[in-house]
Amino acid sequence: MRGYVYLSVAAAIWGGMYVISKAALDVIPAFVLLWLRYAVALVMLALVLKARHQPWPRDGRTWLWYGAVGAAGYAASIGAQFLGTAWTSAHLGALVTTSSPVFAALMARWSGEQVGGRVWTAVIIALAGVGLVVGGDVILGSATRADGGSAGATGAVASSESPVLFWAGVGCLVVAAATWAGMSVLVQRAESRLPASESDPLVLTAGALVTGWVMVTPIAFMQGMAVGWPALWRILTTPEALGSVLYLGLISTALAFFLWNAGVQYASAARANLFLALQPVVGGLLGHWALDEPLRLTFCVGGAAVLVGLWIAAGTQPGRSAS
Image (cartoon, rainbow, N blue to C red; front, side):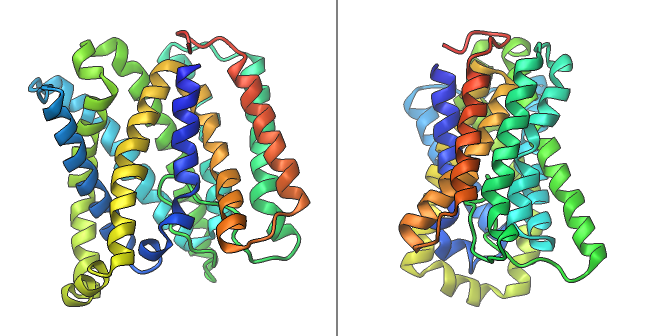
């Protein structure tokens, strides 16, 4: 069950990310914050690798693999989620991006994973639960935020007034879900395609983050220019924003990405992506505790459905043992 524990902790961290780091998420431009998250995470992972006396890989083929993981998951997926959430809403963003287990299950044949009816049943139940958790407030006419966002949620709840932008945002969210699933499949396949020392989750996470950090740098630079460096510096040097950046870099990025990649290698991509359904549940619980947001009946029913879906998935046998 080790892999499922890793995945649950990673999803819980991302689920509570908005509540805990609201000071940074609300005032720092999205890609500037993403760049800072990755920079902090890379420093920490590099220090851990040095402490373990574990060298960085030098093989070009290995770095191509890391580049594919970083481009799909840490650049394309999270970048698309930022845009999609900004152009639609946080509720819709949480709902669409947690559909990634559907894409992961469809990609399972390519990764060599057998996905049976029980896994598909788990996917349907868990996604129905997410729909109730995330959509309950919308259905009942409330604008209260009920989700904690996934790996890169912005925290915005307002949706775009332009139909074109709205549907472009929906497309971005679908891309975010598909590319995160694709990244998970690549992480799973890395274990059989790369030497053990290079497919190690810690090394793989650090290498992929290098790619993600490089790819978001141009967009982060343009956002920083638009805001103005003096104004951005004043924001970043406040204790609240600085603490949030450190939390996002060390916990939500370095630790959570490592746990996710380790969990995928234990539990397989299709089952792993189901655990993203925990994010809005944890976000809603933390929002209720920290921000006094209401918990409606739809949230409770949906949360129970998510847990049932995960229980069904955990009871299936993945391509490799999950224990």
